[in-house]
Image 1 (cartoon, helix red, strand yellow):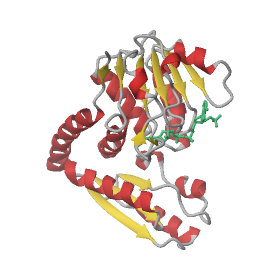
Image 2 (cartoon, helix red, strand yellow; image 1 turned 135 degrees about the horizontal axis):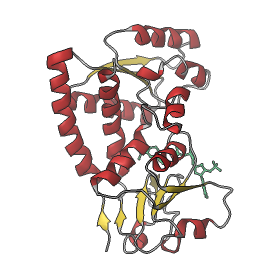
Image 3 (cartoon, rainbow, N blue to C red; image 1 turned 30 degrees about the vertical axis):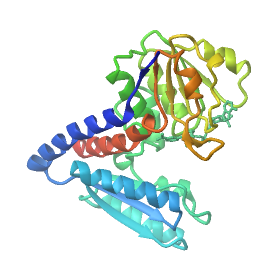
Length: 280
Ligand code: NAP
């Protein structure tokens, strides 16, 4: 039987610690501010934004919410970002994605300097991560590393497989594991012998967006299995990319969905905002 990596409990613990750090920061240096920009009425985005604002309140970070109508022009969104970039009240700028189709997402995100890029998505932060230098790390993979650390799982010398190569999860995850001295293989939709590659992993991180894709035969006995996926099963119930029920007895450690990686992501956004403020 494996040990469950409890992301919910760890996130709560980290938020408690962060709350104290933020309070101390406020006493000595002033408020920490996160700007959250939402364009349009996408219901899922509205929920995400609400959760982020609530999480900020919980730890004492001041949030500034900008909800723009769906038809807002490119130049108006850019003008808002430019204002936030120079504002001394704002330590981090988060633009909730996806943006409405008529907007050039890349152009908008490129206006955010790496010092305020609390999502860790910009080229400079990604480049710094690749070179193992001081940076801001994308929240989800950053959260995964915190989970490994909290459970005493040292990637050093281990064989790690990252399933998925997205810019926001798979690639930064692979870089973090390389920086932590793991031997890393990145898999994607064109990978051959996927089952065998995954089954050789001491640490398997899965982020592909396919419900219960990773079955027990793809997992090595005693492997650490981290499930980033947030999917719906055949009954519409939230589940991950890993067939949890069948994999859990084979893994040494495993994250559940929900209650695993998910709660860590917003927590790391708060951490990144605190880090950005500390480097002002
Ligand atoms: P994404 O951008 O859609 O990328 C999916 C990746 O999986 C791609 O690299 C793709 O390969 C690969 N892939 C898809 N099907 C595959 C298959 N059959 N075999 C091997 N590789 C396959 O996804 P993402 O944004 O990284 O998100 C992945 C999952 O994580 C989603 O369920 C998402 O909801 C979840 N997520 C959760 C959190 C959280 O906080 N818990 C945060 C972010 C994302 P190609 O590159 O070859 O197309």
